[in-house]
Image (cartoon, rainbow, N blue to C red; front, side, top):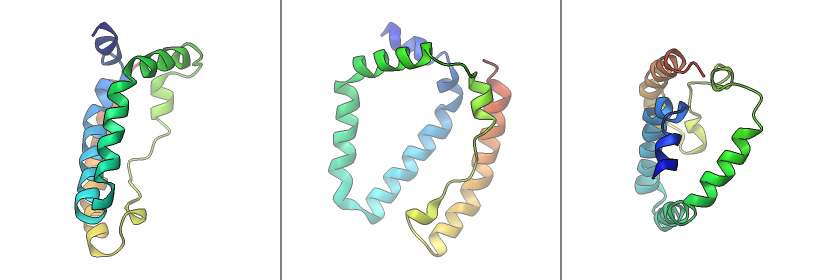
Length: 116
């Protein structure tokens, strides 16, 4: 449990709302348009749970090699999601109009919060 709390005292805590919204969008797409992959999504969650220790260990190893701060990486991110790969047409355009401003605000908030 100590490893989890250490992870969440990082940029991950600032990015959590964006990651959560992206996951909800992914589930929405799977449930509405790609139901054949519901089992794949569930297996992916199970894999993460079963391999959590290895994930944390690999993350530590990767983080020890870093030369760029989180804030410098985040400055190069984009706030737009490419929804065209999931669906084209009116729904994608509507989703883009709703999500782009939301992700723009969340990106600005994240950049304001992250200083490490």
